[in-house]
Image (cartoon, rainbow, N blue to C red; front, top):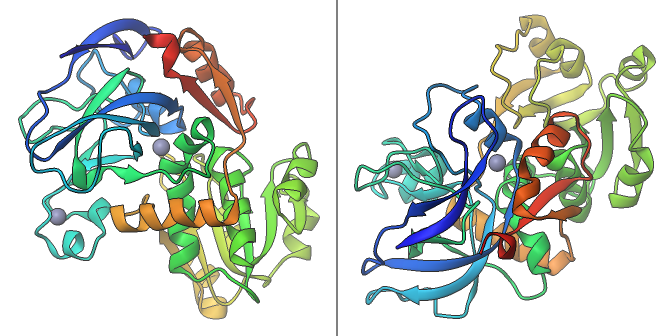
Length: 346
Ligand SMILES: [Zn+2]
Ligand SMILES: [Zn+2]
C-alpha cells in the first residue's frame, strides 16, 4: 500500500511530503495506523548524514504510537483496535544469545532499525513520520490506556534509553543519580529516576531550566558552566547518566563518582570521548555505555510509566512544522519533546 509520509530528499534539503510503499501484511505482521510520532535528535543526525551514508528519500521517526488496523493470520499478541507502539527496532535474528536474553538491541547479527536499516526483504526501513507502518508483532508494544496517547510516543526512544541504564545500575532508594543534560532524554531520566526512588541531581549547562527540573522530580540542580559545581559534587554519585550528544570533559564528570560509581553514556556524539586511567582507578569507577532497550524491557518501561503516572513533556506540532522543529531541537529550544500529530499528514 502507498501511504503519506514526510521524507528527507537529501542530506541538505528540508523534509517534504511524499508517499512511500508499505509491505503487505504478512502472517506475523501488524498494520498500525500511526497517530503520533516523536522527533528524536537521532532523526536529525541520520537524515543529515552525520552517522554515515543514507539512501534517500528517507523517512525517519522511531517514537511511534498508533492503533492496530489489521493483523496477519498468525498474530496472537495484538488485536485490531489495540493501542500500540513501535520504538527503534522492528526486527532482529531472534537466535543469538543476546536476542534469546530479550536484548534484541544488542543482536549479534544486527537488529533491524525502524528506519534506514536493511529489512528482511532487502528494502530500506522507513520510519514513523507516516500514516501507517507494518511491523512484525513481536516488535510491537502495548501502550497502557492510562498514558495519554499524544505523550506516549517519546517513551519508545527517550523513555527506554534512560530507563534501561537506570534499571540495570539499580537506581533506587539510597542511590544518588546525576543526569547530565536537561533535554528530551534528560527530562525523562529525571522523572524515571525519581519514580524509582533515587535522589536525583541535574547537571545542566546553565540554571535556565532549573524550575522545570525541580518540578519534574530533581532534588538538586547545578550549572556545569560553574567550576565550583565540580568541586562541590566530587565523589558524590553512584550513577551518572550522560544524555549529552556532544563531547564533554569526561574526566571532570568521572571525578563526581563515589566508590564503585558508574558514568553511563546514552548520548551519541560522533567524536571520541577521551578518559584518563586515573579518573577511573580512583574510587574503582566504571565508564559505560547503553543503547535503548530490548522488547521485554521496553514493555516493562511502558508499564512502569503507566503505574507511576509518568509521561514526557511534549509540544504537539503539525507535520508541516517538522523542519522548524528540527532547528529548534538543534538550538535546545523545546520543552522537551516535539510530537507530530499524524492526522495532519492524512
Ligand atoms: Zn531516538
Ligand atoms: Zn540476535
